[in-house]
Length: 154
Figure 1: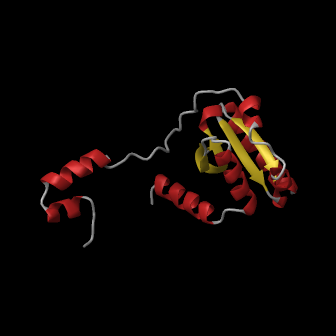
Figure 2: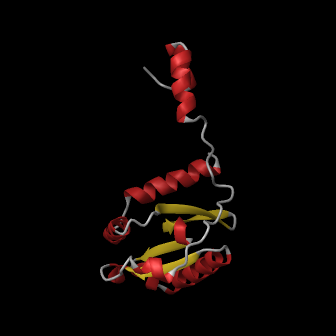
């Protein structure tokens, strides 16, 4: 399995295991019309990390931390990870679950200046085709050929 597929598998699994606190943060960000990517993968060392939220407009990573982030080993990992993210050009905001209720997402707009998003490396998935190309092919190609090209099982 290639790296992109592995990453997408983990992202998909994480999205299915959303916590109440992550859901609350999603709701708050949407209410303020702050664009974000939930479960955002970033290459890290010889592997990858998945950040809870990425706000491209502010180059901001938001991590929603549960109780296990209080454990000594996890604290050390978080410090190392945050250092990497900051050195890579991201702002990092860590919030404990207990802080989500009272966190004012509007403050993101004043705490962090607008920035150009950090360009993701080695992780972008190339589209096999555009929707326009698919629509054009649907008009031109015979049904069997179209279904085969776009892997449609009928």
